[in-house]
Amino acid sequence: MSNDGFLSFPQSFLWGVSTSAYQIEGAVDEDGRGLSIWDTFCRQPGKVRNGENGDVAADHYHRWQEDVHIMAELGLKAYRFSIAWPRILPSGYGAVNPKGLDFYGRLVDALLAKGIEPFPTLYHWDLPQALQDRGGWPNRDTAYYFAEYAQVIAEALGDRVTYWITHNEPFVAAVLGYFTGEHAPGVQDPVAAFQAGHHLLLSHGLAAQALRETARLRPHVGIALNLSPVYPASESEADRQAAVRFDGVLNRMFLDPLFRRQYPQDLLNLLGGLFPQPEPGDLDRIGAPLDFLGVNYYSRIVVRHDPEFPLIQAVQVQPEGAEYSQMWEIYPQGMYDLLTRIWADYRPAYVLVTENGIPVADAPDLDGRVRDERRIRYLRDHLVQVHRAMSDGVPLRGYFVWSLLDNFEWAHGYAMRFGLVYVDYATQQRIVKDSGRWYAQVVAENGVRVGE
Ligand code: GCO
Image 1 (cartoon, rainbow, N blue to C red):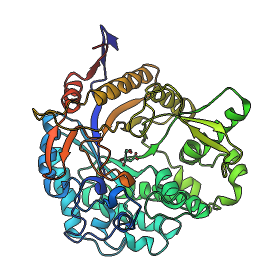
Image 2: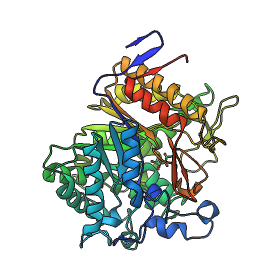
Image 3: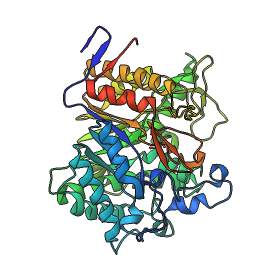
């Protein structure tokens, strides 16, 4: 509903923020945590900007109570974080590390005490190194180890946690981790990448089953996908077909198995030999009903046909005259186009925007304030599109800003600041940015003032 420049949201709307373990926790060698593939990857020369790593990050492992206090001060309704598999099962399977379970149990209890709904993600890219040493995600066994890990967590937290996200962006974990090598474990092998993609999806299905069989509170289980609307660079048939192929690899390769229990036939035809042969029952497990779909939206993709481009003959272009952040084109309309397409084509039970945000080269002014108008404008413009999609029937129940804190942005190291809260990495001081104050007002008023 909107009136005189104010867009109001439903009473139960979940206003949240998102983070991930490796990007904020630090304490990588503390309290029994095992090595992850990102600890190993960061130590390989040239992989991460300035050789930076997550050893300390935002020191959340020690400062989590202060961070929960900040979230409560902002009046947040929900907090999406990830659980570090190597903290729970240092070798990936077998012996459970009680100190790891204790950390997340205390965090969940503190959130609930403040009326903040915990949204744990079970996997946000920090695979135990010991499992990578046994083949990693291309090894089908990893999917079953993941299900065991999910069961351990459900036993420990399933009496207090209602909402569960199995995976964050399996596309990125598979393609950047095993095809391009830009992310951990830095493998460059197309066959391994598609095997990894299938096993990540299979592990989602197995973990969802474990959560539903083990958690004492009836669990709402979802998955968070990085999705973008894909547009052709021109109206030519060649570019239009390129956009279809790119959409297939980026979006439909995950949405179709999850919602239709099948891989897209055009992709199988295009990439055929690269796809692993699903074993009997795989697609039924992957396609078991989802309680919700998590959508990570940042920007759109514009592509043109390029016969030289391997596998998909489609290459991304950067439209002229557009506005850009340090990482992507700023295109709020894409949020509406994406959400309405997902609803039209896949009919999820309900949707959460599990990530949306912008990197800005923030710094405190002399008065100590961080005046991040660009982030406020980005978030407002995207919330307008979220509201528009809801008005057009998309069952959207929540929105999570990426991110609560400035943090380790993977191969970019600490160069990209996404937080509503500024982190001075030298002192670990937190400063709530203007965008954090603005978001607190959105939450308090349960709506967005437009045209300000
Ligand atoms: C992702 C990841 C986050 C990123 C964020 C900014 O969506 O890529 O979930 O870990 O840090 O999106 O790139």
